[in-house]
Length: 156
Image (cartoon, rainbow, N blue to C red; front, top):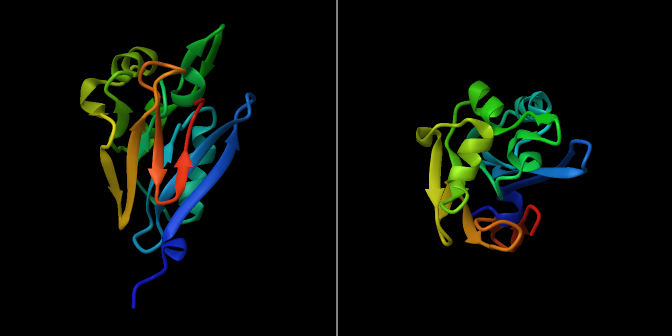
C-alpha cells in the first residue's frame, strides 16, 4: 500500500530576516531528504532547523538573485546566504539559467556550485518531485517551484 502524498511530503515555510522573507523546506518524509528555497538571513537557524528534524540537505533552490533571497550586500547591509549554507552543508544550488551570473556575482559562488536550470527542469528529492517554472518579471530569471498542488514563490 502506498503512502498518501500529503503524508509523504515535507513542506515548511519559515519566516526569516527583518524584511519578513520566507525560506521553504521541501522534501520527503520517508528519506528525510530536503531542499531549501531561498536560504538567506539566518543560516545558523536554517541549519539548526534541519538538524533538529533529522533532515538531510540535498540542494538549495533560488527563486531570484536579490540579496534578501540568496545572500549578498545591498544598501550597506550584508545578508548571509546560500554561500554560507553550502559552506556548512555542501550541496548543489539550482538557479534559473537567466539568473546564474547574477547569483554568482552577488554571492561569490563558483560555476561548479551551480546547476543552471530552465523551465520544466525537475529536481528529485526522495520520491518528491520539484518542478522549476520560469516566471520572469520581478527579475529576468525569476522562478517558482511546483510541488504537486503547491506553488512556492519568491517575489513573483
